[in-house]
Length: 249
Length: 249
Image (cartoon, rainbow over all chains, first blue to last red; front, side, top):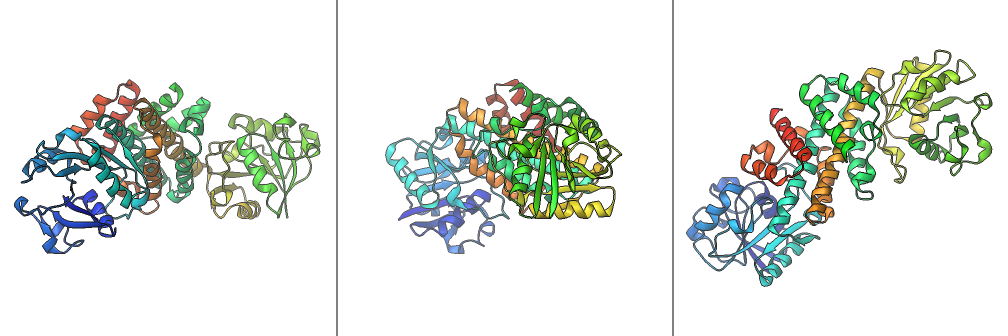
């Protein structure tokens, strides 16, 4: 049995809380949240605290707050030599306070409040200062996911940049596609099988091998037609830059 | 039974040929290919011709060649008043020769030679000059796919531009993510669940609702870190432009 205190009540904190409450071998000892209401729909009130001095003993303290609050929260903890981890893709291990043992427990996924996720498929990137703590985090990760990886702060930084490209930026291109469809009275659902296939394809081919389309073929006639078609200067500029980028690699 | 002649031996032609050969109520009468070798692994040689005058009678002639060859191929056909369609996302119905009845049969998917596709999920965009011909194409589309849509030349043009954004450009962002991982010795497979979830998410939420990440949160500290991290000027520029674009909508 691994005893966990979750510190934070945001998106990632809530998803972690939900999956851990449903995991037999994890006990959620407590949740620390500045406002109890933000989390009381998931856990009974007497298990929520907003007072640092009331935080109970646990094997792992998971700080899941915004990046710029991690250091302050870690330094406010009124105990020492316990295992305190954060869940951030961008913050280094070293932002945590030296009085406790440090770790990172970063689930690499896009979390929206209104969409359930299957945690078992989410890669969890782990980092600790020593092997004993790694074993604790690995055991915890293995209880909720099939995939745990040892990832250093430096590697995690690169992973987070890459994740922005393949998730946030990709989703933004979906949004542009959606808007082009709306403007031309074409149902966006026509594009969904293409979107799913494009994502699935790279589990079998590398993205480089999987590439198709006018930019790759250097089909200048089609590229010109598309540039003429696009009215919004922002879309035009993105089309141009992405086409050039495909042709440069 | 619908009798079909396929004209062309490229990527789309081959995928269409494969699915139609496996569809009981479609008869592939013949394939027209400039070089028989390009297609002889899929169909017996006496069903392939490279002579226009040898093309047999059929209900539908599917021209699946590169965009700039469609008009020439259509005008070379030695018959008239038959139903001749092309499979292009970018070419208008009107590029086909007036001597025959015109149509478009555009399967909206990304076809790679080395990856099989499930045709039943591929939307097929149809256009004809009259209802009788539409009924023929609709019957043919229904035999190989669950989804057929009536899409005008103007709508198809917008759809093709949108498809470039959500497929080719998205795949290019996957490639950038892949390269960032390689450069930093992180396995790219860590990002695959994120990629699949990002694609699946928009079947339940609109891309706008689904957006997350530093650009949306206007997390300038993380954005600056990422910009510093990116060495390649091309990636830097894309990061900047896509971040601005997310913040503008």
